[in-house]
Length: 370
Image (cartoon, rainbow, N blue to C red; front, side, top):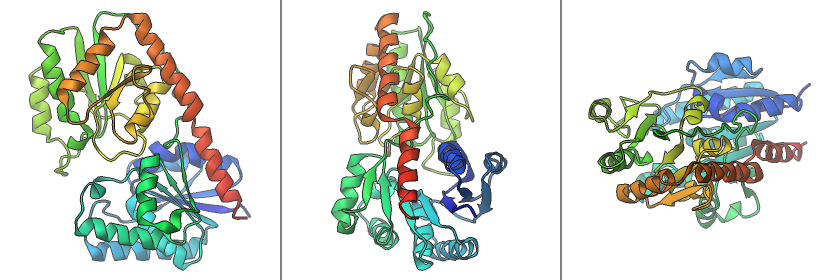
């Protein structure tokens, strides 16, 4: 019988878009893999990978204690029935409630803390509650992976017991074959593309304000915005605001996409002015892998991908004027200099962020349990 692994996340789209490589790698290495998440339109794609899928009802950002208790019971019931050999937790609630359920059933747990989220930017009752829950969830885990050194240090200061069982991964890694280099086109009109969930904290407003600054003198610059928009969540940009920006000619909104490669291929520079508590942004890895210069903020997670002045530029967070200056720097380079910048980005991800490194670390940890 094949060893059984359960991978739990907060959404099926997240499981498919960010963990497909790991799922396929584990299947190839002889494991039976089950994904657990709230179901959505990505479930058929997950099953097509050869991975079984189990639906759980979850409100990823909800604060209702009764709903969270029901989630804990759902995990407990599923894990008791499936009897997996290992539980892999990703994102906050699966990491907390899935891990607690696994510990109760004496199932080995490996966690992945992919960014700290907005809760850790504050210091209130919710922060204290989440820290208490993390303490319960991580105490008996076999290993806890982080996506940058800063997040690891924050957790080590809070939880001494992690000293002997945590490690840093190169983000979620990037598939270097799927995201292969595409030559930059030598053209007059240059495309500056931001790819992100359209959250205020991702720096969308700063991107638009930078466009407003540059539109006056640089008519050959096109500012494009690609990403998911949730009209029910107040942390996202309201659609009417987005429409006003588009009508005013500041930016062009491209909607969302299941495959960002074609958009990256058409762009001359990728921008992510995020001040959200990132792990290591996947879009920056994908852009660099495809040979595109990058502009992002000098914040934890984001700065991991950029060697300032070599494969892109770092700007100050929440500073649209500084962002505009960095965009000008890229677009005033000649074609060969921009191309060289993209080549250095590709080389960096090959050396530091190959998805194969992430998968190998997981395989090593999982194999040590048998």
